[in-house]
Length: 318
Image (cartoon, rainbow, N blue to C red; front, top):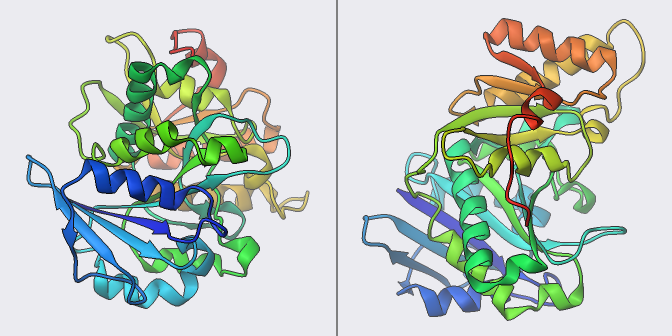
């Protein structure tokens, strides 16, 4: 198995990635790789299970210049050879929670464009972040959270359709959301350690699922993914189409349900393995619930209200 991770080398442009790269240098037995992007240094390392990890420096956060990199990515890191790609960067914004590790699938629901996403790889990194934060004591004031699926390239002028042109399962992996958090060396080390566990064999039963509705940092996502009970499965939401972005750009009217149906279908098609469950937020509008049920019926998936699942699990409270 092969993974590739991208790190912007300029801390003025990306205040997290290069800190994480430096920690990777200490953790992994790196050697120079010939697979560089834009002529910058790139490195690779192997683990005891025969997996290979590539660590690639970039001038900008990859998603901010993704359009011009699509063709080189396909030739240097071809989908026939690579199993996962992680873009390491920072989380910020008004009212953003602080002291967090967060991750999300990459996609733009409004245009029905989604990068591929893989259930086990998303779970493994998130689960390892929790384990490492617990071991180091950081879990007392740091959280591991899942964000809604979105595409960070859009504010930088990138065309969302381009993310469909490099068919390697992807995720954004972030530290947030303040200057102190971005430069926290222990946080950087925890994220760096987690990168090497993306291909672990999960010790729990994983249910590939799609989440619909809710808020951006919807608590249901991590609560159902990281359940404490060993006899209960983990619901892994490779894409989470939370309310503001699944509804973005829609217009009330007779065609709204069909438009939402199309967006949901596109997300399902991008997830490996194909989801068997759609979980919808109880407070979603009727038109969104109807579209969700229609998609579930067509794909022969279970369709579950988030409240009914929420009552059945206890979760790790950090």
